[in-house]
Image (cartoon, rainbow, N blue to C red; front, side, top):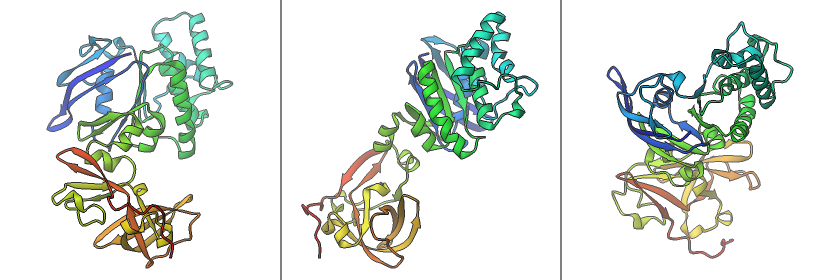
Length: 354
């Protein structure tokens, strides 16, 4: 299903849940609605489903305006955060529910449910009740039930929120593969950026009722268009105001706006370990945290604190160590214009060893 939303606005009393939100979704895409809690993600999902009516704006499915269509006329499957399975029904009957409502024949129901049981890996569980299933199995039943009537659009409201972390990671991969196999346009709400980056073809960043940015995960990560997106996606060091006193960035000038530095833009270490010592600042290690595959180093440069990651293959640093801090590049945001600024002093062709 091809979807176009134009200037969607929705308020609940004095609270404006969405503010002039517009977007387009291509048929067959898997889209992640990502943002902080209360930002408007679920409201957008419910407006698409017909469970909420926008105060203004239009929703078009395949070019047809559907604002006045009830949910059952929109060709939508909905997967809820809490599964919403019928407790007294077996796995088979839960999956078959939508087909039963549509008055499909018993032969059609048996065939379709059988296909979905196999697709979702629920073989042998057809007669079990929901309370006899694990959380991951219940979520698979919910997916299968939503897909049974062959919807043109699948909506998922934080589908993994009620599942423990290990199973959640397994289901992410399974969901992406399943959606690709079925080919149905799908939109899922999440506040977990790792989940969105791993699963979605495209991400829509929603904040305070507005669409901040839409694009492929790698594009949003590498080219954030607003300070919010740069600070929300991935990890970052954030600085307000002038950063022209940072070594190698004097050319930025004063009143530069907001600066955001990803930890992977920074090297922290002793002189032989830093690739361009002459472009680095002097700093002091304040804290060291073990992160499994790397060390997280918090250092102080002048009156600024920043953090970066250091390979476990390098000697460990300790609080109080004097180190060099090399900032390779940073993002500058001024009036919502983003600029990537490189360190101009990275001129040493090779590391200098002393």
